[in-house]
Image (cartoon, rainbow, N blue to C red; front, side):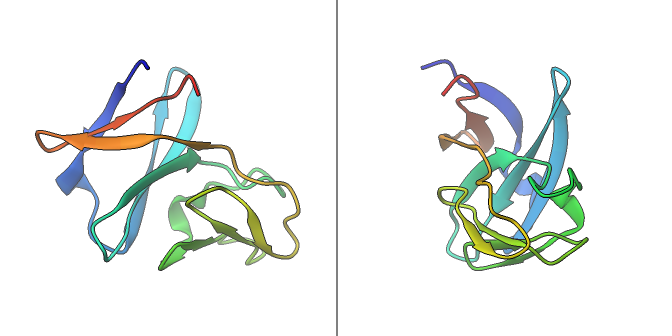
Length: 104
C-alpha cells in the first residue's frame, strides 16, 4: 500500500473533520470522540457539496446542504436525499501524522 501524508493528527479536533485538497481531489478526514480517524471523498454524492461544513455525530457525517447522512466507516448512505455511497480510504496514524491510502 502507498500511504499519503494528508495532515497532522492534531489538525483535527475530536468529533470534527477537515476537508483538504490533494492532487486536485477533495478529501474529508474525520476524528471521532473515540480517537479514531477516517477518510472519505470530501464532496457529498448528492450535489457535490463540501462536507467540511457538515456535522459529525459519532460515525455519521451530515451534509450541510440537504442534511443527507453517511457512515464515515464505509461511506454508506444513512439518510435521504443521498443514495450513493461516499468512497472511503484506509487510514493510519503514525508519529502524529494522518496517512491515507488513496489508491484503494
